[in-house]
Image (cartoon, rainbow, N blue to C red; front, side):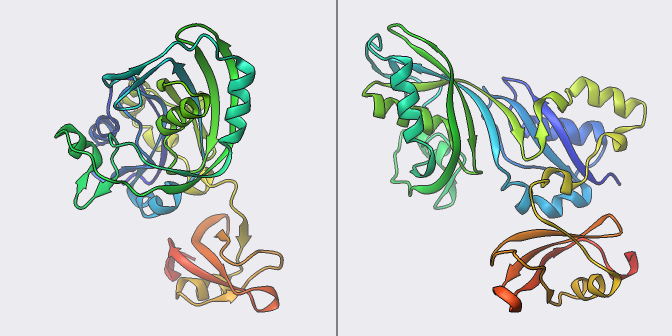
Length: 303
């Protein structure tokens, strides 16, 4: 069975589920997951997990992401993107690039964000988009997300001004909502007119595979050569190399002494002999800090 992560390029017009189904068919395996959906109209990096790598899903999903986002000013839609119905119009001619840059800076850091009604968030057993399609609206709890960088790359003024931006953000950030929030800050309706995800963790769009490239690799029986290890996606996490005694203890779910300077709650990758042994978390502080295994990937027999 194939095990590892696959950096796929999702084209516009396909759903994330379509991409997963396509990889299942090409790789001839059912155990395939993904590290975060993209809206059908969006394009870009989709990191898929095959085989045993799906055990890392909760950690891989939490990776930071980078997007190129085009925001159109002067219009807003009920879905906050170009797929919806126009609900407001205004002349955006007085908006300048300088003003946009100022407001983008105000939307960085930790912010409160309400997920769009047309999103896959669960509410009382149903997806929000299912509720929205029935013409209903419900109160959705806001979530705290982190926008590390929100930068204006290009600005085209006019009645329907356009701002090309780059967003670096935490998992769970809805760029559609950021577009609407920018419009509110400018006093002008706005919607997300196009979106490309250029990075998930360490996986970048320039390294993404098309469906055709994956099919050719499958025909030549070399899909396994294209798979990366989960720790490659989590390249920014601290890493610890465990000796055999420590590795055995962690395999058994036991706590071990933590290296100095790691703060409480820090998640770390523990490797042994160059292989990922487990994902662990620092518990306690100072000289009493310990490493607690959270997801063990190797057994004692594998050491």
